Image 1 (tube, rainbow, N blue to C red):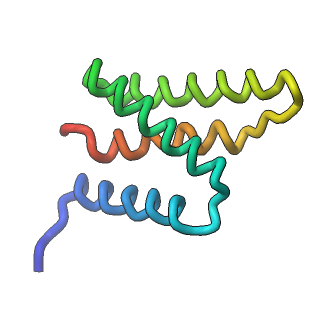
Image 2: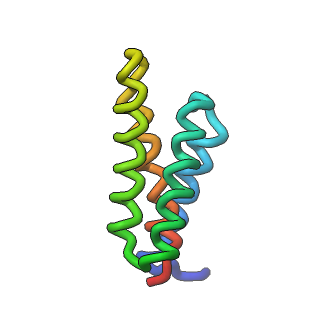
Length: 96
């Protein structure tokens, strides 16, 4: 039986979590936020090589979007959480 390193176990766990979010009853809007967070963090990581900066960029985008939505009263903090959760893919799959 193949032994999994801690990093590989974490990647597997996060991948399964992402799949569950995307394939279960998670609202389509939350899925879009998750994908946007993953895209932003992936781009920032590819430019900087820094996972922390990548996740902070996802956080900034999520908060900025909800601040924009607050203008008409449609802000939802769970949308920001879904956006930040997208950085988990970059964190898990970034180079060690």
